[in-house]
Every structure is written in C-alpha cells, then in structure tokens.
Image 1 (tube, one colour):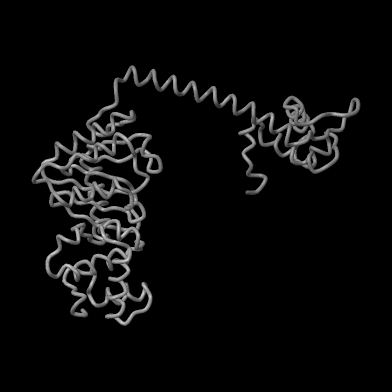
Image 2 (cartoon, helix red, strand yellow):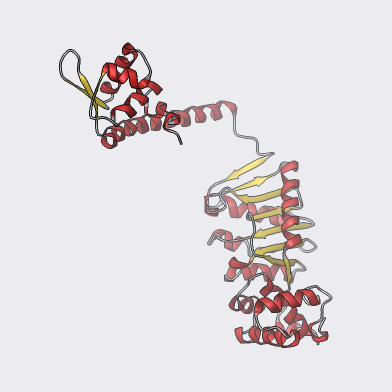
Length: 334
C-alpha cells in the first residue's frame, strides 16, 4: 500500500494532517513554511494541520512566534489515539445492538418459513430429532468433524423411519470415532447407503428435500444451527449433496462373517476403495470390524495379483482393472 493511500480518517485525522505527520516523522523538525512546501499547501493550511496534530498529541511546537514542529514518537502517540478510537467504536457497536433489538421488537420475530436459527444446546438435537422422525421418504447426510458430543450424539441414535432411504457421505479423516461408525452402521443396516470422500464442504442433513439442517459455523458446530425451509435454498443444497455423492466412494459396512461365499473378493474391493481415497489401515480395519493385519493381507494379496509394489501402484492398477467398481472381481484379475 502506498503511504498516500493510508486511511488516516480511521485515526480521526484528515488526509492533510496525515501527510504532514508523515513529513514530520522523517525530519528532526520543520517550521510552518517548510511543512507547507513539503505538503504542497498554503502556509495557513499547513498551520491548521499542525494545530490539529498538536491537539491530538501527535506533534509539539518548540520556540516562540515562529515555532518549529517535531513529531511525537509515533508508536505511543498513535497507539493512544487508536485506543480512544476503539473505545468510541465499541460504544457505537453497543448502540447498533440496542437499535437492532428495538427494531426487531417493533418488527416482530423473524420469519421462520425461510430459515430457523437454533442456538441453545437443547434446540438443535431436539429439532434434528423432529425432522428425522418426521421424514417420509429420504434423508441425505454429509458428515465431517468436528462432531458435537453429548445431546446431539444421543439424538443421532434415533434411526430413520422404516421405508425412508438414507444416503450418507462421511469425510474419511473423521470417520474413525465410535459415534460416526455406530451412526453409519445403523443407517446402512436399515437399507441406507454409505460413501466416503476425502473432503466435504459442510456438515448437512436434508429431510425429504423440504428442509435442511446445517451449522451456523462449520468450525464450531456447538455455536448453533440453521434449519432452511426456502425451496430454492434447499434445492441448491440437494445439488451440493448430489455432487459430493457422485464423487465419493461406495463402502459397505457388512461384517466379515455376514459376507457371502465370494466375501473375500468383496472385502478386498472395499479395502482397495477405502485405500484409494486415502484412508489408513487402522481406520479401514475399524470400519470393517477386522484386524489391521487382515487389511494389510488383503492389500498385499491384491498387490501380488496386480504385480504392484507400492500402495499407490496398487490403487492405480486396481482402478484400471475395474476392481474399484461394483463389477470388478479381484479373483479374476479384472
């Protein structure tokens, strides 16, 4: 930023006073005429600017009838000036809040037919429960950390109504805690579908494509949530979900002993899919309820069949062979 662009008005100084101060800090001292020449203004304008700086304790005169002017040390003098300005702004902010409260009281409560604002610790989980149990055909879910513990965790224990399809996408880095795994197992156990992806833009739940629940602040979900009812906004959020769903990798949480005869091939495919989206062996093992050693054995066996040595090579060749699709069969080599 050029010095001429500095917004001196933020300190309470006009642009001319700011230019004069910039000149004074660069010299030991200067009289009125020298200041006027340096600033390109008349002596009377320079005089007014110097008096302004003196009133703000930013410059001091020395001498008699034709004094010379010197700048006060900038850090303490400007710091004190800024502190006064901050205090003034704080008073203005308080005034704005009082005016806003008065305006809202006169205008009535904000309309809830477009967006509801939920802030209390009890409102969010209770509203989630109402929306979830009231859904009749579909729930769309994007999940990512940080997760809210306590009330909302217990609320997530409520399953969808029979006949309601639930589709969930979890962020891989956060899909390692007991709550998210239990919630995902419950959803898929009721006929829901699960996918994983490396990055999710926002936590989101959409109910029957008629209402959507998302946090006010993505980095601090405990600060409250919004319930969106606006058809246009909900439609946009559904499109966001579908775009994330399309890019995510399908995952089955069927336990090992529940797999059919070709279960080993299905398990290898699941492990390779999770590995391809960047999940670690410990996370894969936790999700599939198998040991870390079992995961590593599946990866090693796949590498032997593919002739690949590194995990990266295995993921690339498995994708080329079609093993990561629903039709690919590791036992057949593609």
